[in-house]
Structure formats: structure tokens, C-alpha cells
Length: 54
Image 1 (tube, rainbow, N blue to C red):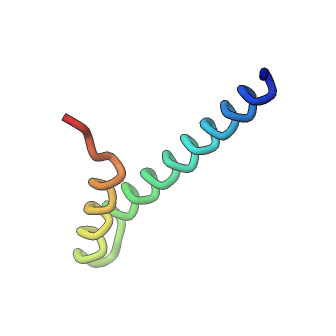
Image 2: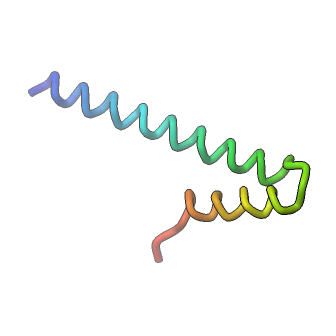
């Protein structure tokens, strides 16, 4: 059982890292994209990625 928990923890950490990377790339793109359309699209992606449940 400890091996299963270690693998689950590793998968969780890897998923969190990839999610943080995706959010960071979308945020940088939303700020630094050359055209307004690309910045707007990046902001929309960012809204989807960090959607809050209320």
C-alpha cells in the first residue's frame, strides 16, 4: 500500500506542476502577446483555467 500512495503523491505533484505551468504560460501570453486578439484569447483561457466555484 505505501507504494501506491507514493505513486499517487507523485502523480498529484506532477499534475499540479503542469497546471501551474499552463496557467503561467497563459498569464504571460495575456500580457505580452503582440495583438489584442491574442491577448484577449489568452485571458479567456486563463479564465477557464482558474475558474472559481462559488
